[in-house]
Image (cartoon, rainbow, N blue to C red; front, side, top):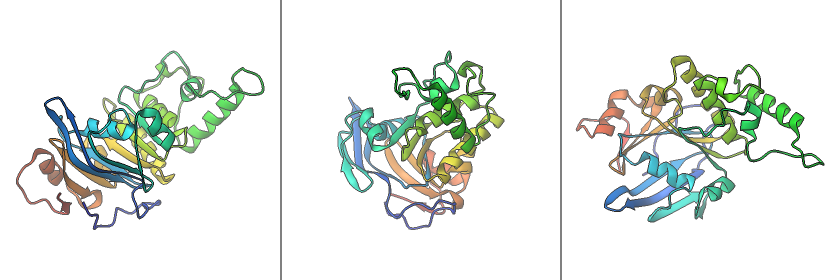
Length: 266
């Protein structure tokens, strides 16, 4: 698929070449063909929304990027070089971080402990450097304009939007270059959704590439630069968000036979 239109204007324009690209990726589960020769690309400083009905292949494609599913066919290219992802650790080493819908937070731990879970820094002794962890956590949350009562607040007492934000920030702490977000605003209220969307915008301004899976077209139009539509395991349409309409995107998702303005078809 050839990109012919400029992306919507933002402070951090996308690079000329995609940071992460999938070429002709296919995946079958038994008798079910989940993906069929799907191309995908996301640039640094770009938010790409991946949309489609249930069973369209969104989760399978995202898990392929995350290294949790190995494609049967196709090529994954990261920063211009073909790569093989044999598991999530390979994706993490490249700089691909994933925030799944279940968040995987520890409710009984505070914000600092959740942010550093599994990668706690140590000083000269074998004990954790709590002061460094707390200071870095406060600086990071402040830089991303995330408001919480205290970094020592147990995660269980935070709102849904705050919990989602902590999960995203934890993924971003490893200095990734690509962040995959699976339904980041699902089951959130209006104010909490706005908080998460603001965080996505803040990460874009820092130059991160982001892939957002969402069923909420309102959220998709609020934060994305491009919208890629999957239907029945195939990429069927690509929209520049600034030029798209909700009706056109819905038509592409459902397969309605209507004229879709500003759409590129495969």
